[in-house]
Image (cartoon, rainbow, N blue to C red; front, top):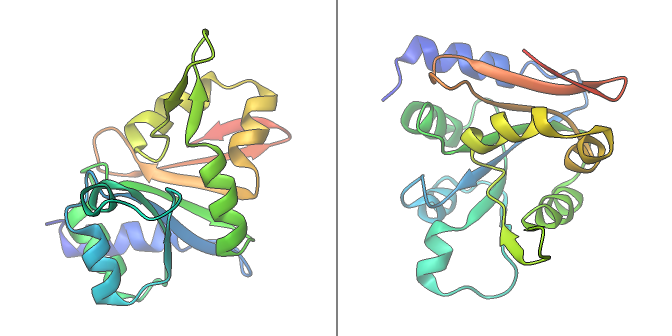
Length: 173
């Protein structure tokens, strides 16, 4: 479990968004064991990013878009148990859950050079950290869509990497 002072520092950085912006997480059930049960237990607003009725095994490992409140026990659980374990990413937005669901679902499928569809796990911070800097301006515009900034654990899991667009260019710090 993460040290309490580190959890509080990370929480402050995640929730330091300008007024009017909201914080969501995209969490990976394949990394966060019993994620659907925790969502239910803590009563957080969420939606699975996979479409349709899922087989129970797939439901356990699916990605979920979750609305976050800084003082929620669910946030304590995610940061305390999952920080540094690539459970997912955080997004700061001025958008509703429904709009975000549509946007993030649109990113789940990518195509290889032979036009074969592939599942894209962009919500894994290990993937997004590497992918974003390779994007051209049009790709960044697509990936960001309604997102003001992406927040994720750095490679060592000790700090937050914050990525946003400034004049169409990616800035990560």
